[in-house]
Length: 507
Image 1 (cartoon, rainbow, N blue to C red):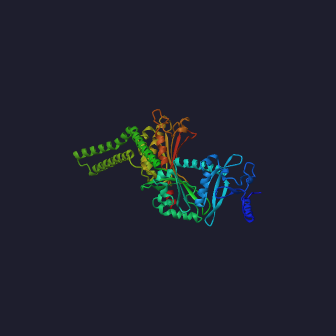
Image 2 (image 1 turned 180 degrees about the vertical axis):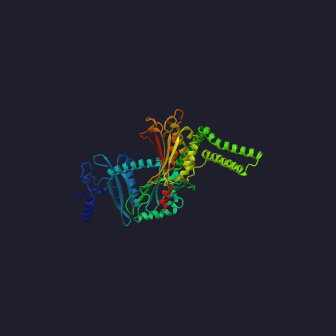
Image 3 (image 1 turned 90 degrees about the vertical axis):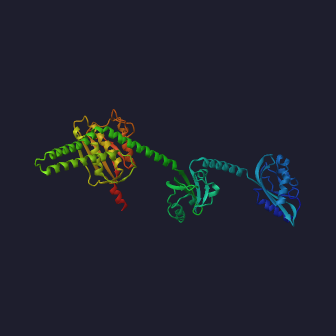
C-alpha cells in the first residue's frame, strides 16, 4: 500500500488510482522543497525503491552522486517552477545502486499562483535508448555510404517535390541540399522533360502504369550553371498510395560519352589506316588495272594522229571511232581513280540507304583486280530481295575488300580457286552477305580467336584486318562469323540492317 503524507481521503484515493493505472512509470508527488510526499511504489522489482522507504525523503534519493554534487536536483525543480514544466533525460538511481536511463518530466503544481509542489514522472527508456542508438549508428552508417557513393541519390514525394538530396547529387548538379529540398525535381531537367514531368507524376499517382519505375534509362539532366549532361537514371518507389516516395539513383555519363567518342575516333583512325595499308599491298595490282585504260588511250590517240598525218581517203568514221574509244578508256581510268580516292578518303561516318549490289560491285572491282589472272573464278549469287542496306558505304566496302582479298590469298596454292559471293534476305530484319573460298581453311587453334586483334593465320600478317571488320560490322548493328564446311574452305558471313524492312516497320 502506498504511503501518502497528509491530504484528505478523497485526494488520497485519486492519487492511488492515478498511480495504480500508470504503474509502468515511476511517479512522485513532491512538496515545493523537493520532499517526497507520495510514490507509486517501485517495489514490484527487488532492486527498486519501495514507497515506504522514500516518503518524507528528498527526491535527491534518485540522483547520482555526480548530479547531486552539481546541484541538479535543485536546478531541475527551479527550472520546472520557472517554466511550469521541465523535461530531460537522466540516469536514475535504483535502490540497488544501479542506474537506468529515464525520461523525467517535472510539472509544477500551482493553485492561485501558489506553488504547492511538483508532479514527477520518470519513464525507463534504457531499452528504447539502446534501440535508438543502434538506429542512429545505422543511420550514420547509411549516411556515410550515401555521402561517399559515387552515384547521386534524390528522393522526391508523390508530388515531385525533393525530400532528400545526397552529397553526390550536390556535387553533380551544383546545388546545396537546402536550396532544392521542397522544390519540384523538374528544376533539374531541361525542356521538354521539365514541362512533362508533373504529368508523368500525376499519371502514376492516379493509378497509371509507371513509365520509368524499376527501369534504368538514359536521360538528360541540367546543372545549376545551365549546362546539360547525359545521365543514367534508375527509380524505385516505397510506401503506399498517398504516402509514397520515389528514390532516383543517378550516374553521370559525361565521361563515358567522352570516352566513347575518343574510342570511336581511334577506331575511325585505325579503320582509315587499315584502308591505306590495303591500298599499299594492292598497289602493283591496281597500277596494272589503271595502266590498261591509259595504254588503250595512248594507242587510240596515236592511231588517230597517224591517220590525220596521212589521211589518203581514210573515212572519218574510223577517226571518230578511235576518238570515241579513247574517251571511253579515259572515263574508265577516271572511274578507277575516283573509286580509289573514295576508298582511302578520311571522312565522318555517314550511314545512308545504299544499293547493296552496287556496294558489292565497287568493292569487288577493287579487291579482285588481277584475281582473274591468278586463276580465281568469281561466282556471284545475289538475292533480288536483298537490295537496300543502311550503311556507311566506304566502311562496308572495306569489310568486303578485306574478306575478298583474304579469300584470294587463301586460294593461292589451291587447285580449285572458286570465290563465291552471295546475299540473302533474312526474316529478322537483316541481310546476310557471305564470302566463301576453296582454300585450305583456318587452323583449328586460331578459329576461337579469329576476330581478335593481332591474331593472324598469315606469316606476315598483323592480325588487324578481321578485328577491324568486326568493329565495323558491329558498329552497323550486325554480326560477323566464320564457318568451316566439311568439304574445305572458309565461309565468312556478316549481317547488315535491311533498310527495306526498317521502312516497312515504320509504316
